[in-house]
Image 1 (cartoon, one colour):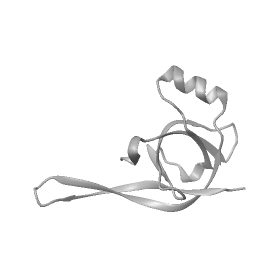
Image 2: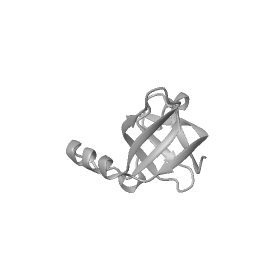
Image 3: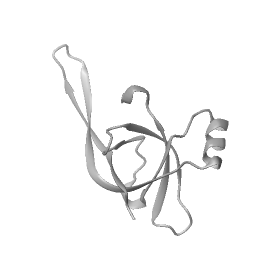
Length: 106
């Protein structure tokens, strides 16, 4: 059923660096089971109407998602930005439509 796993940011830890600036570092929950599915034509059309490009659909259990804005594909280390979420009625799963970030930056 699950063909991959992801990491989701759970909290941010802020500490000051040597110059006195606050450096935020995200703490991730790792090993969340996920199903990576192909992007449909409907997803591509909706994304282009909204001004972004969708690269990957990720399906996870709805209880694992709390509105995070990005996720990490654990197999490749790629950072994906969550652009749209979809949950069918009475379903325990949520589909995250994601766009791959340029150069993997946070």
